[in-house]
Image (tube, rainbow, N blue to C red; front, side, top):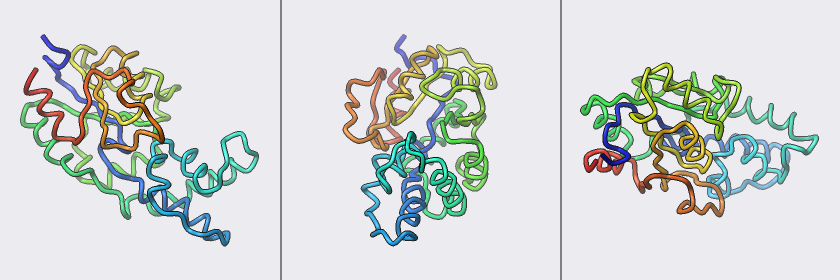
Length: 223
């Protein structure tokens, strides 16, 4: 039996895996720049760092890191701005709707495990009909630890009542693969996602790689 031979539940990262939220994340940070008289930056500058949330967006917009004393107040301002535009430009990646329909046709449950806080995850998933059929949603603050710690994945499996050998995790960041490996589940890296600047995706501890969402169905069919 292959690593994907008896998958009963597929868990997904959210940003960069199921949805392209980079436009709303990037513009929330860019609006902070322009409000201060700084020139706007192009979206591609933000896109590669979208998976890092406020840390990544503020790093691009202002060149600061979390240890900068300005980071805390700027982060709260960013959160407030992002909250106002949560789903204005955010869309599911092409093929995600077919992927989720294919999983449902195979009677494979699916859920979300993200480092995005519940403050944003709950309204976002409620506003996007495609995401409302998730059997579980674990946010970055659902458990005491966020990925790459395995706790969020273990919590999702507890809620769904599925064993690790029957579970698969798909994500676009190395920490997703590390968390999945630590939780004992099969892992698939989404190369169409944000990945992170300069990421060596081939070196991630993944069991497989996909270049678009529907390829995951091919992995399951060939198992």
